[in-house]
Length: 189
Image (cartoon, rainbow, N blue to C red):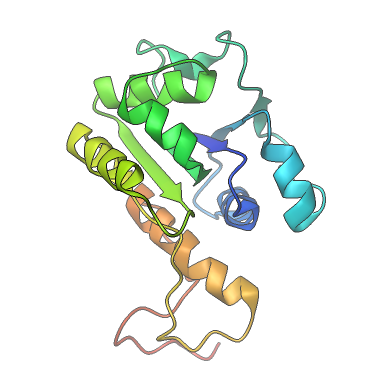
């Protein structure tokens, strides 16, 4: 799978870190992954997880140059995930304001009818943010708020993170065994 994983300066770097790790370890891979970092992504990640670890072989891009392969409709990609997605980024996408490589790429994915997954972590939402969420949904994006589940009785922070990452992987069509599914027994291997 050919993917763009964009990381913005919103809180929730651990979700991005874990997604990159799982994509890198996928036995059905390898995936071609392009990582786009907003201007504040590393700063927030440093505060939350220490050094942001990007697997070797994943291509890393900044957000200020349009000289990246995923900002054109002629470049073929399967999906784009923005995790975490700041509400500022979401608002720019909702209103077609393509002032950065991440916002431009999201615009391209929408116009080309490619899978675009936005993972906002902000809470609570104001009315403007709620309307922006509706706008991106109507435009064809998928929104997976970073809201962990508890029915599997998580014991660690990583258990909680994995419930969100599992939903992202499900929507990408990537098989995983990160979490117990509802009403499903897990093997004790």
